[in-house]
Image (cartoon, rainbow, N blue to C red; front, side, top):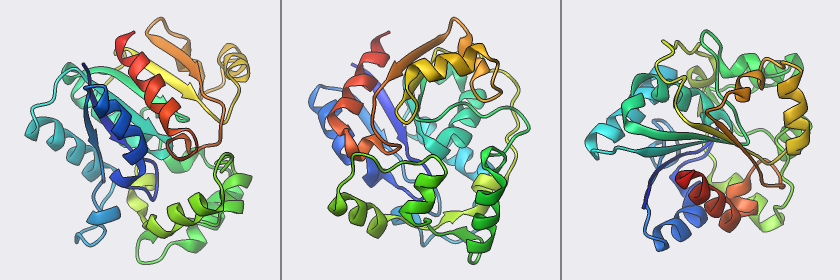
Length: 244
């Protein structure tokens, strides 16, 4: 049996993994869904939470719960703190899984991956250092497709989403390279795997690093939010990757 730490993307909390965690636990796995500082039930915590605080919080979880051989899962924008944690504590991690996401490079910020028009929209939307969840149509226009979600699901996610601390996506990630050799995996949802392989072969800066022998590539066709649109299948692919 495996130990999973599930880190959600921007605006989400541990609640986002409810329908993924349930089948994993039923199969006997140990599952730790995460709400990062300033989000979900932790939205009322005081302080300015940047990327370092999010990385430190994940590190504290691993130490506090004495977690080893962790399958560390990053959905979407969680790639930033997860990449940082893998670099800081590689000895505790069995595999890093990027769910419709990918590793963040040294010296880069999540903000750097966004198109200029999306950056401008984001900057205009920040209130008191936090970014509210944009409208679904704006997210879809910039690659975060809600495919597979019905009206009720869209409304539920919107009602539970909380504004994201701006520092967490603005701050540059600093890596030592200590986690580079860890087994890693991509579960591609928004991009067909054939397209991903083409981008890897072409040396695309966001995908080129996935060519190494320590990478596994999987496809789960749906929108950008597979924990809501295909939760059982998300759990199944995570369980499979834990055993590779």
